[in-house]
Length: 133
Image (cartoon, rainbow, N blue to C red):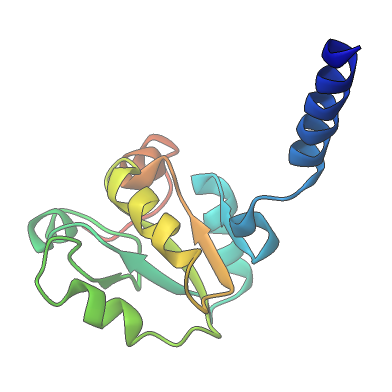
């Protein structure tokens, strides 16, 4: 009897987890492919592009119009928090590690519409999408 009740509770909890959206998804923070990000940027020129790689990486190539905010800079958090939470953002780094960390931090802020490119700039280039050299 105990096993059946415990099993039922476990299955109920598992079902709730499957239907409960992740806080990031519910708030408009989402992962997108490089192609989806490119199409969004083509459709809506008001989207702000955040490149959180180092200035050296940025100079070697970046998405057109991107703002470089170095993830490793001392003023990184201040520069991110100075952004307007009501705007729409596309964010990337080289391969998704740094931007993933920032995406997790965004879940605890007022930012409502952030697209994250997990494949990073390397994925953007693999897709042969246009960029500034």
